[in-house]
Length: 145
Image (cartoon, rainbow, N blue to C red):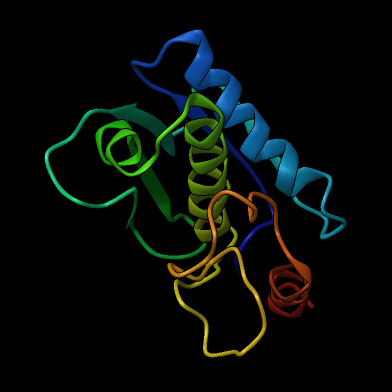
């Protein structure tokens, strides 16, 4: 069974990126879905960011199987910077991407088959969708009941 409570370590990022990560954690931890995502330096799952070659915004790479699955999250600052035109928009896109990738840690899939708005859709407006939406919350609750 997947878990709503887990820890993630931050790797090789500066204090601004730690703040982005903490905002993503807070977005899920305060969403009313029972999530308890912690930052812990000894955790196996990891979060990092860099200016990677590639056109993706974020990558979630799971390893192992449940209940001992781990993962690595990478956020691509280069692509986000390329596709935004202001620091305000950049910050919003980063928060949207971080929260989206942490949604995978809660067992949510990309591009859910729904007509409802979702943080997990690649087509979302990253400037306005930075927190879990009603559909995302209902899916986490469904998975864990």
